Length: 208
Length: 208
DNA sequence: ACATGTGAACTGCTTCACAGCG
DNA sequence: CGCTGTGAAGCAGTTCACATGT
Image 1 (cartoon, rainbow over the protein chains, first blue to last red):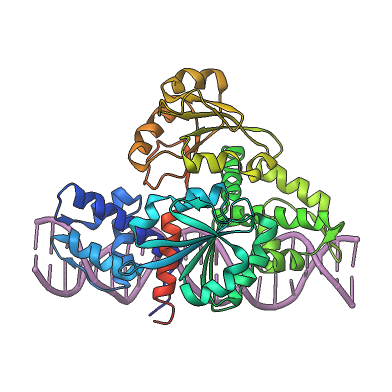
Image 2: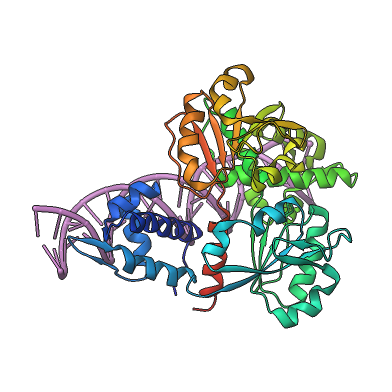
């Protein structure tokens, strides 16, 4: 497949959300124009995004809501279950574990890890918190697809190194640290402080 | 000022972090090359990013760590205190309120709101949770700069409308909803489900 | 000699505009 | 006729390469 821009993938997620809201309202078809209005983009952008993956619409009609939903789920890889580990059972880990948006999309939390003896063994959102010392052994048995990382910044890189060494190939990082992984491992980072700083910049330079 | 790309602003945040780590290690100067290596970009990119705002380096030498830190903080608008409201006192709101990265950068949480009678009045991370019914009245008194929004997706747009009507001009949204604000209001959204879907896409299409 | 600062070249995402098809 | 699908054009962000200053 030709390389797909990250911005395109983000919009595909967005389109899927819009489709679900249309579906909930009982609508059977949608045009690129409606999709664009709800998704905050343009109709040409919608059609271009979809065109990378095929031709899903009917000229003069638009797109079938259920059909396009199915295709987008396939494209995004949401047609299967993804086994997720949460590493770091602090407040952010807790918020992520209970986040509805994850389970709804086929991301199943199968285990939670921490290194704090006060947390280990405690039942936590339906999971017993496991000792992070067991990470390597458990990885072979669980074979998780994705690790959601929510440890303090200082611990993030060493933990990432262990995750990688354990053979897990995808990490979603919430620690405010710039992490390095070898080629072949997929890493995405969400940095909330950076987002606030972006706002701060916009407010400061609003009319400069 | 000429328009600055969002990607540039993100990198400036990153450079500031690198500078702080260099400072902590007692280093007085840094080159664009070092800044690039730590920040995961190229030296040309670093120099180009900085060039939008001035000439901060010495040829043949590099940049003074404290001086460049100061300049970046000014550019990003971190030389002042930003008053932040957190609206939505659920798990995500709780995680955000206690997040160290915020206070460290001059973002001060001055109030927390919810609509759940079981939470209202409770003391919560040093703040008494306020009834969201008071939002409009309090806004006039508090004059918050930024609202961090962490309410359920269904409630997000109505709450945003009230925030905007109350005259607050900047929102950092964590609700998984596509929100609309009038021109003049600054909105940034962080959508964790969308990030996971991006990972899912990459994993699914890794070698396609 | 060394590392910055910056026009120029390049790459790639977005927008345009229209042919094609239902 | 209406709306999709798509080459072509336009624009924005990145990379190159070198003149410039210390």
